[in-house]
Length: 93
Image (cartoon, rainbow, N blue to C red; front, side, top):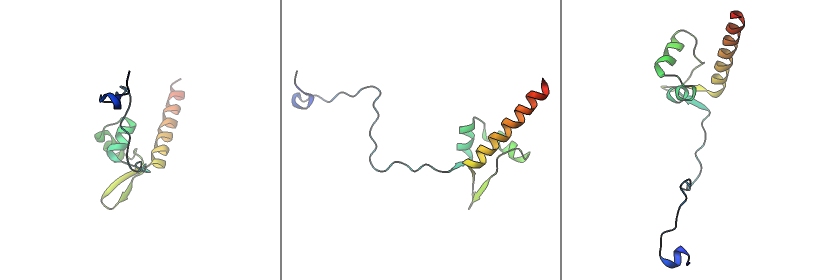
């Protein structure tokens, strides 16, 4: 059987193959926007703002008019919540 380029047929693509990117890869950010933080942590933006108003949210960083959460602040927030949960679980036993 002749190769696709000789026979004039379009080359076949496997189902899992993705298009190749041209140009540089996107640079990963070192901060979360509020929507990306909420998506990454599985919470709604309304719940995020409720946590912040109660003083239980992560540390925020303002840049111009935008608000961000650094990866370090998110990690600290998660660790604090894990410790609080662990303490509550041991107290309940």
